[in-house]
Length: 604
Image (cartoon, rainbow, N blue to C red; front, side):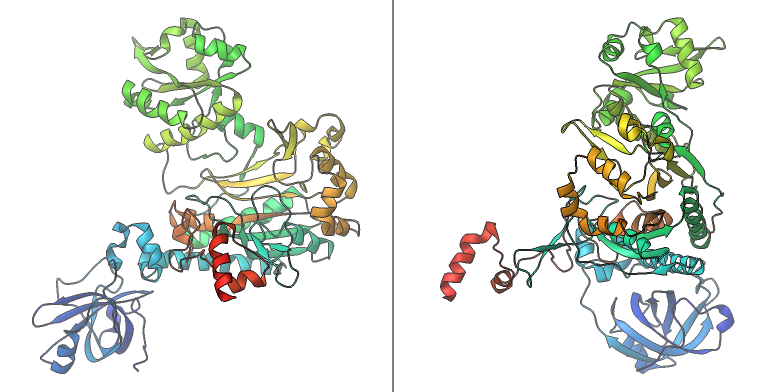
């Protein structure tokens, strides 16, 4: 077999006259009757090769049998392309290889779709033939970027003295938050392992073990419905550190993010990154992961709205609700029909019962409100609105009246939609922010109790410790999220490291001592043996690579992803298993119980 001397993206005009051996896939084939041209492809690029009947009729004849996606190796002389035939889109576009020898290493069936046109093919077909889909240069770029991110990460943490340590894949089920994936045990009948939702308890135990600086690029599992930016099976850059505070964690990881953006994209990230409290984020943007590429803050106008003649506003406020709005620069482009049929329907999907609006117009040098709800505002109230939003001519004011949760939930995505459609930011820009001072608890109205906003091992802010006894609903936590362009790429917290505080938190969460012992007993025991102050964070590797490669589909950055139904179309998983395997695990599949009983009877 011919052993290649160069890859298909390597040759340049300076290599003219060099004897080379290339190997790869036939990307395209052009038979001009006399000369045969083939674009040969490997993961590094394309090189044009040419077969000339005058110099090597035997190889030319063989070349005419070749088809796309066949695997071949060639030997020949690198030479400049004919004048006017260069391809400036290719790094190898000024050169070609005149072939002297050809080996057909393997043939290929006709693929279900062309590699060059795969983006026009349905995703399900591409996932079923993922090995063909991954041959595309755009997919190779995503895999290469993912590799580079993990390499940068490992080198970065190694230089800082971190140890990479693996934690178990088969662990104890500690039900909280998302559902666990369960794995039945054959050796201990009627018991189950759980696949880890994160290495949270193990990495904290490593801090008790005096590891001090741990990291791991780890597979995690959550039995949730997949979506465009989430998979049931995902990867984290997981970190834990001892004898640190919030500033230490943030410093280490914003420097990591800056290093990744610089080495992958050549983008200089300004350090230190901006910080914003949870309350500020929710007040100004309606969400705890704000997109700061554009400045369109939400404004609470409840004080103005309650004095208007607009019954929708006044009745909502009387019932304990609020009115908030936003000012869309240049939003005059939206017609009444656009607002009432498109934007109103959009916020309705998030629970809003309606969308009030008014346009800002200039008359004789003065700004006025026109259209929609403008008639319900007095001249003085209109002036107050214009000042609060710092509105300009041709802007669009939009308002939602409801309880605070629904107002924020509907206005936050509307803000992002308008920012995108009005082109208020550069798609290639990146704005980072740390969101800090999250509430420790959130109130569960259905069950009339507190839930952890993050997890029950998150430490309260020191100044709020006394509120554990008096005002748990207003305790801030030592939690922090790093957000880029409205996408949370990482989050973590300083942990509770003493049992007294931990027990108070469990009590407020209505976790009894028996429940705590059953779920976390092994971990709580570790806390009693000299746990140091510690904290950590986890970055979502998949989301990181999504941002770096400009895709909104998480399946694009995972080599072998699952569909939104959690299926692998390549391997057809999940699938049924043999009755013998079920018997070994002492399991019965309920939906197929009658069929299994019939099979068992036949076997007997």
